[in-house]
Amino acid sequence: MTRILVADDEPINLMIIAECLADEGYEISQANDGEEAWAMMRKQRYDLLILDRMMPRLDGLSLLRRIKAEAAWKNTPVIMQTAAASQTEVREGLEAGAYYYLTKPYEPEVLRILVATVAKDIVEHEQVRQASQGLHATLNLLHDGTFSFRTLDDAHLLASSLSSLCETPDGISLGLTELLVNAIEHGNLGITYAEKSTLRQNGEWENEVEKRLSSATYADRQAVVELRRFDGQVEFTIRDQGEGFDWKPFLDFAPERAFDLNGRGIAMANKFSFSSLEYQGKGNIVVARTVARKS
Image (cartoon, rainbow, N blue to C red; front, side, top):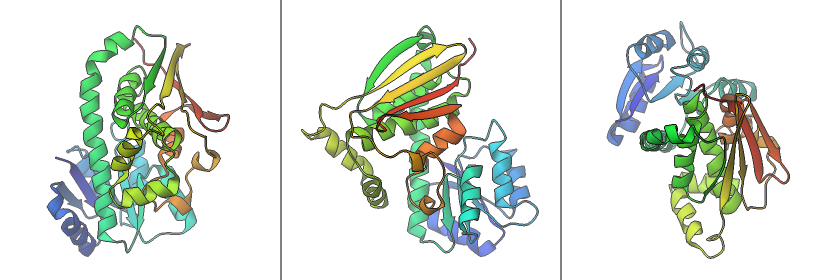
């Protein structure tokens, strides 16, 4: 069961969120400010945090920064919900590590979709992590290799397995998953940013991916990730067979995309996962580097 901690100093907001998510099967805890939330986090593990930005004692942005500074918590997804919606405020929240940013008032259905997306990612990540644990000893013998992948399941399994060679496997797994999935959906399958936004809103994204994977147009397309280990570093080079894209706007967090259901993956990978991230050519090649795990 997904454990969610909601922190908001307005009781009515806590009630609205609890009612919005009541029938979804989550375990929901509530805090009245950031300090109370932080104290609760020291005693209990939560899978997802929903934070109000403006709270007494410790505001949501300060709590978010504190969370991201802690190794045990830095990869925990955070949804920031607030009335502070200027471009500067939104950028601050995104750069501090907010997974999504919601401005009040928002439609309950948007929150339900966001939470369901995060919860599904958490479950899939844990399942793949467990399935790939036995591969680490074998992969540790590998210094150079090329892996082909085609489906979302391939991407999740590869990301979880290959990240075990890195110093911070959980953070690398999240970032590598974003890059591999991007190679499939936007690269090989040609799903545009706008198309994905609509598909996410309608809960049809994965169905569309499967549909295109089965079509004659895309059936033969493969992506590859090349692994290289050297001088205490791990380098991943990911190539797809698509037409490429303008990657430059996606390397950083953009306030104008803050309220979309997609569009932050590359920026998250660039800022929080890898020591360097470099797109090459027309955008269908990306090279990511990080510190290798010590044997």
